[in-house]
Every structure is written in structure tokens, then in C-alpha cells.
Length: 288
Ligand SMILES: [Zn+2]
Image (cartoon, rainbow, N blue to C red; front, top):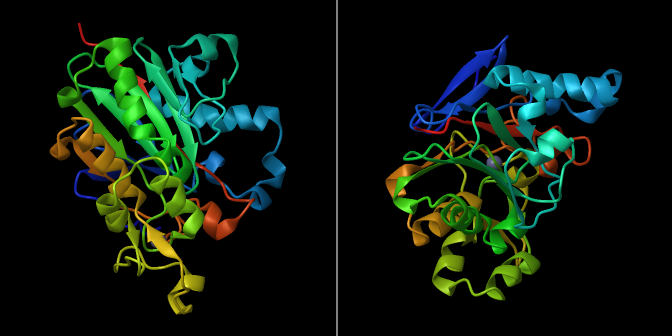
């Protein structure tokens, strides 16, 4: 299968012929991956009817923990609710529960944190000075709740991280080529004190398509509708991080739109309820 070309600092690898993305600058500090539609968790529900049930779900997650070389019960996951709540540490994995949260922080060895997404931005962070990590998930609601900044502040207050030491990878997610939104979305940002200057940069009047990320089919031919914008979640995420002190040169984007690449990536906007999920997962390697 031909795979789309990711951003400069990302590259494709594979685990038993299942492709995944890694962000090279993040890798020396924290093993991690962004999975694709070709992993069990990425299969669309209607394509995976034979694979439903608890045991097969456990098997599907085992692909992720195997790739990170950790025990299955050392993977921390949350019940994602499009908010900005934070959980810290491996307690949830030990207790085998999934608290409601969209940000997971980890400072322990031999453990990893994972988020799932199908258009929302999966974000992986590492403090290169200490090795503590974060995994976060944000769609427009999470961005309006400032998930990137909340995750960064949580690293600062919990582990004493300095933003200047934090490296961030933004995984595949829906791009401004495909993510048409209405006034409700723009209003959610305007009412939570985002500047008009920023909003004018992230709410585009025309889809921002490229040869790499083509508008998904219904958008390619549709006439523009009034009072609709194309939301640039990648810029919104990086802008929040820069404002909070992360050097721009330490924020890396995969640059791949989930909706534009139907065979490789998972998109709720494109596939609806049966959409599979991509996983962003990162393993903590505390530094001495
Ligand atoms: Zn797209």
C-alpha cells in the first residue's frame, strides 16, 4: 500500500505489516506511535463484526502495547469526553478503570499513555529533561477548553516541567481541507476569550487543500455555504503551545488529514459512527 508523505519530522514504520507514524525528534526521549486504519482498533465497525467483544478488544490493544514493549496492564487510558480533565500516573491501569479525562500524564517507567481519535488531534508530549510524558486528545471542544495549554500547565505543576524543554507531536487529524464548521464552533472560541486575530487565522473561508490533503469527496464539488468555515486545528494547537512557552521549533505536525486518506486513516466526519480510531501512545522513560 502506498502511504501518504507525512510532515518532515515524521516517518512511517511498521509492526507486522501494520504501518504507524513516529516523530523523529520525540523518539530519543520517549518511544511512541500513531497507529492507522490498518490496526485492529482502526478497522471500521462494519468491517470488524467478527472482532467485537471484550477479548478481541483486548487483543486489539495488545498490538499497541506490544509495539511499545510494555505489559498490557501498564497502558493508561481514559474515557475521552471532549473536556480538559487530567489524570496522572498508572493508578487507572492498575485498577483497570478508565476515568473521564482527555489528558494523561505519566512519570513512571515501564508504562505508557494512550489516546484515541478519529479526526480530533492526538497530541504526545515529552519533557526532554526529565522524560515525563503526556498524551492528550482535542477536537474543537477540547481546543476551546485549551487542552494543549492545560496539558502543558499540568506537566509544569505536577512534574516541574519547563515549557522550553517540552517536545510535542501532533498526530494525524482532520485538516482545514475537510473540517467544515458552523457558527456554533466559532462562537465557542469567541466566548472563551480567544482573540479575533487568532480566530481569523484558524477559521478559514476556503478549504485549505493541497496535493497531499485533498478535500474529501463531498467537499471537493460542493459550493461554499454561507456562515461556514474550515477549522485549522493544527494551527490552533501549536498557537496555544507557543503562547504557553513551548518553542515553535519543538512542535511537530504529522500534517496528514484523517478525512483525506480513507484507506490509511480514520475519520468520523467521513465514515460516521462505524469509523475506526487511530491511537496515539507514548511510553515514559524517566531520566536519571
Ligand atoms: Zn482533509
